[in-house]
Image (cartoon, rainbow, N blue to C red; front, side, top):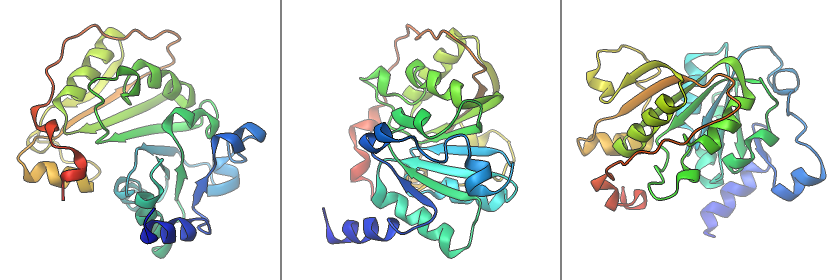
Length: 246
């Protein structure tokens, strides 16, 4: 671990807006804010919105600035990246922002059933070879459906045609309601300041001329989920790993 990462981790340990709980800690005692985020942390009854795989937290913090009457929680396992957004929120005194450092597979350990209003999934790894690790797979949809309210929605913003196509197939197979769908966001004619927030990776893809795909859909409260049986062409540009993008 580099000295810079060690410094960031040490700083975040003292941040009031960052929560870091290991699997072992959660086995010993439940997360204290589960089901009580509004009451105990945000001190209001405003809607709670998550960004999964938040990275540096650009979207989490950007959304919080646009919507002071809503609460936002960024979730990622990479603490060194999260430090950027958490620090920004503290410096700008954004009281409607928090961050949780954990694996997304553990999301139900941090939020109670029907506690969340919306979920944003921004530029995740498409996991082309591992279905169960795709953040829009049925495995994860079960988790999201539990913590989302009855009328909760999911937003997917991605550069990957593979993930976009897969997610549309998953939505169709499970009869979910599509609220918005475009395979070229910035040529779609939609005027929405929220969709114009750009993450670090999104800016890199746009520079390469790659179109941004966006889906907004409602998962409802399904009890059974069916994985789509579909062949999807892999993204050719994915031969370049994200780590090589500067």
